[in-house]
View (tube, rainbow, N blue to C red):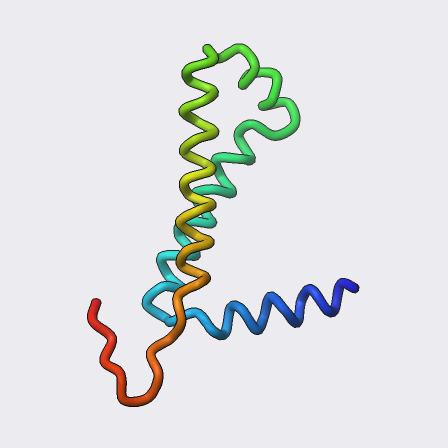
Length: 85
């Protein structure tokens, strides 16, 4: 099962255009850091925040995750196509 997941992940990662790979890596690094802050003992501190602040924080995390998903859906340019960036 784990090998199958790794193989699928590798296929997806190899299909991402290099221009998007750096942006995807940056978004995932930010998302990871944001979620680490509210994991474990950080969750207790997070619960002390106002509902509005918690909602905004989680909305930001969800936005980053959605943007990362969109970058993963982008197909590389095929031969003969020009990539504009």
